[in-house]
Length: 290
Length: 135
Image 1 (cartoon, chains in turn orange, green):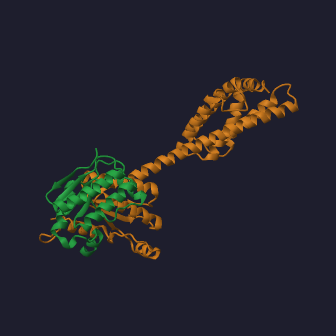
Image 2: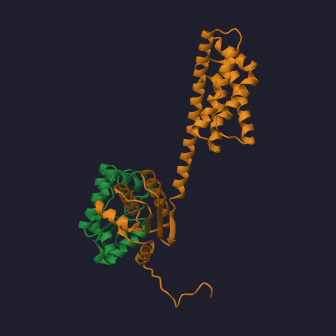
Image 3: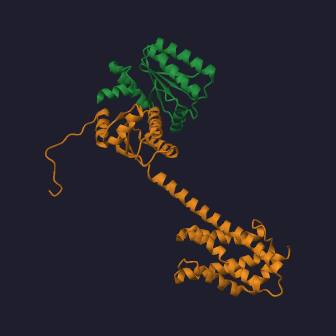
């Protein structure tokens, strides 16, 4: 009905205080405890949402919240979701914030003078549809914000966990931490090759102490990295192979075609030997206190 | 540009590929190079691909062919100056150029050829095999 929206807007305007207090009472009953600061925020958010709801209802249709008239309400709900993600609210608590307005709003509809049962039922249905849409929109915004956050953290983790270290002049080390998937292999490979170019290294030690498991896929990624480094003129040495991983590699019948050492120290020793260097001890070790 | 210049450094030949390769150019290069190896009695061939931004399977195969031909004529081939992006692309294509030696730049490539010519027993051993003997 075309006049429904204006009726709703007028109703919210008239019963503003009653709806707001009823809403907050419902929210408090719903279980989540608010301290005084959080409560003030909730009151403020509720007031804003109610205001925007009234304005949007006065201007637009009730059955479609994607129209431009509803943009302020959508923005408000998105902001609210973002703040709630940061504050560690759960999905249902965030959704409950929107859905709790139903009870006081329906009460207000019922109290309106001279309304027939038929009309009341229809109005309640319209408002329910509207609030359901708004609630779902809030949840979507909430989930989207959380996914963005997870994506950003993944990216940071990816960048943090693939350092290339220069152990010696011409010897690079690549300590791998965590599982190797295609995306990480790509980044690891790019980092390693860039460093080979800038440092002119001839030997790269790939340390897999921090790789929890080696399956055929991980092995394939390792082989790719080693082959790419070889194409750039750098030899690879694989180090940090734990006993279980050695067994897994043999049981799976993987052929890595690369020199491997049990520890990074052995690998560094071999790398130094290959570049024509050696480490010698001059006299007895010096104790740190001396 | 109708052909790729071949420069001589001592008993090494340096081929710097600066233009896009196509079939005829590759055939001409193989012809010229094999003739120069024989004429100059060269023992090393260096192919510089640092100017190439794209290396496809065709060029990959051409590099392998040149390496095999040089080997028959008793010269070692080193491919130098491959870019990181090119290396990644070749690996993703499954072309790891196992028959070809590689070095980071012309300098290191020259040192590698010198090393191999001076120690002929290492000459045709693959690098992996050589590494295994060091253990």
